[in-house]
Picture 1: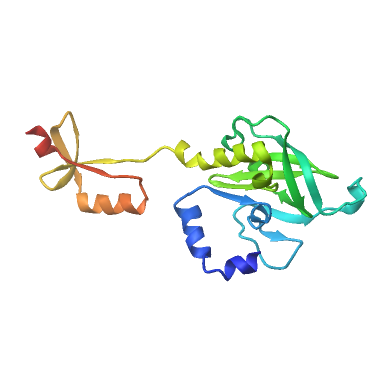
Picture 2: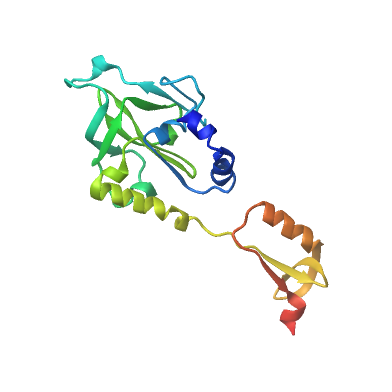
Length: 212
């Protein structure tokens, strides 16, 4: 999976969107596993966006005739209260799984759900805007549709950043009720700085025009 992603030509664009622009990302199944640093499945390094490793299940701990892959329906224990990804989903909702490797987090704060299959393992993670789920929401009927709907609305939950720059005689100023403006810098440079910080929108107000 990592070889294909690295050779796709998309990695730099995806990293910009996720790590710099902070767009929400949801990794599903192996998409969650490549968020880790490494995997028992191969020698290629993962993305390393979440401090974790991917391990193979130990068959001797699994009390089923067919041990691997873990395939079929299983319950998900939501461990992080008020997590937006699981909004209005019941505790221990059922999702569809198909995998032989599991995600082993090194930071407990990144864990938002667990599942049991021979052992209790991590079935959903989050670090800021980066999400991963081991199960397949697209195959999980109503619960899966609800989770994907919740994910689609995550961007709407983020507050928009809209600075308002006040301009007076071609300079950047601060003022109260448009009276006694105090010069604080160059407005062109301020626009460049805010643009680099990827604000959602920028308002520039000429207070001389506002007064009149």
